[in-house]
Length: 349
Image (cartoon, rainbow, N blue to C red; front, side, top):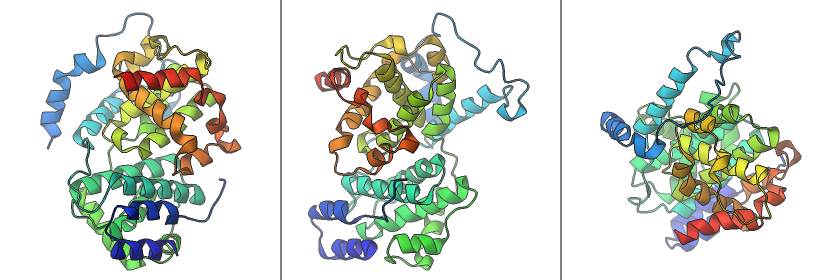
């Protein structure tokens, strides 16, 4: 049983080898399928450096044709995104946010998120549920430094339940989640952890998600299906990477789309590195990021993408090999001189 094996290994083995055991043992049935005001002030002070001046050139009004569609709230959409940008500043994931943990490592986090992604696929839930679950896990682990490795999967499955309740019309039953942990935890333990997590994050589930920004940026870019699917793949892979966890959701979304546009619009056989031309004035305007600002993040994501086929944890890679995800993970653009040259720029830095 997965859960019982994890718990037993955690109790019997305090060495780093436990990380490797968890990599092999965490499975679900396979399927193809505050800083508050101060932070805001500081962000505003550094806005010119990060975002740059208003981009020159033609900027399209991407909401011009939406005025008759009340569901798109074109009159308020920019105010809504102003609010989302403020929220992501108020609820940061700090760099190296697991540093104070005595028993949890970044490898364990990766194993847990890989399992959460498998569970998410198994239950056919909306994209937001996976991304919100990751955000809840990171916020909780950042705040509760004495989390025991025995309870790490309990934190993960409970965060997943909270996210599903918030985002999905039909969230899974607690007993189903008990089954997926192979009864390592009881329904009562999940309910108690649910209360503990919600109290820890002050019942605040408003942290924006990369997918919310990605949809806006994709509209600004006029993306095709393959371009958006590839950007979604990059966003999910970024969720696995500990070094990328501290970037804002809007930055992850923008950098993922920048890389997608670059790989699919450029020549994958030309080792030309990043080219700012793929980040248009319209994208710079609506994302509030210049290509220069996104460059280092984009190159970090490119390395994760290039290494994904050989990675030990492959839930996301295997998912995006499927036809329902446009077989994006099999695209030749994800290997070759162009992406190598983008990654090499990171190594030189």
